[in-house]
Length: 419
Image (cartoon, rainbow, N blue to C red):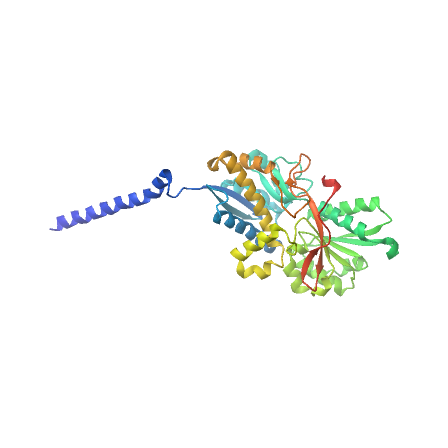
């Protein structure tokens, strides 16, 4: 009796095991015969960036918007046969972590490297080409321009400085003011952006010595008080923080007003635009009124299709954050990165097929990019033989404290140095 019972139980187990094998096999068989689940090919993007260091807060917000753009891509099946995965390596804005981070991301199967800080890309250098891994980075700097495997979304700090100087020189009425203007540059030690901006402003000063005076200062990253610096800057008409990140920037702006600076603050993508909530938590809004910024991005106050789509994605994927993000630049910049990356991957898939997408295919697609973004720039986004920079147009924005937002004060314009 006991033996028959054991045989019966054994038969039941074998039957259940056979049934399980059949059930597991159904999706695979269905994928071959139609009507079932088709397995997607995974494309891996390695994100090499500061997630917890001085720029971590703004980077994390922007990176979240990139990921949400790809949620839309998945939801709407905009790249059939493919799923996109992001692996991250936190640099903590420590340049010594650039190469180890790159090596780790490569070991995790990255098909492309994506980062914001171009200096990190410069430190990885020729390894992108050696390993056939394209790098898509935010801003261009002289040491990454002209590299076959490094592609940029927009111009670097030297070009931002050029756009700023062009606007000021066009708008400062010296005959009416009765004097040249004075501009003060200040940056934190150790960041390349200050030197690039200073070089551009110095070149303008050599060309127009009677139009303006300039002063350039460097402060330690750890500085919490700026009395000495502001003694030299408070009589400036414009103060331009060239490389100032995190709470230090907010403290500087607040202290500048407390110590008598009456002029105009200047911002760029990597300064106030990137740390707005920190600044507005410390500095009274009225003290920021009239600040100007050079931007390669539109703002929420621009009525263009890209902004409308970004708002729709924000309301869909982060409705609880909508009020916060609509007063920040993170979401828009992240959506722009996502738009370009998705376009590149889609074209690579269409050309070689999902399973054949690799670094070479993605590099070719990057190089062949041509995007017409309505309302954003005066020409299609495309790389040229001279510049591996996709979006080369600028506009100037101005902050209005009464509405606590930024507004365009120019149309898009190009720089002769970028043509």
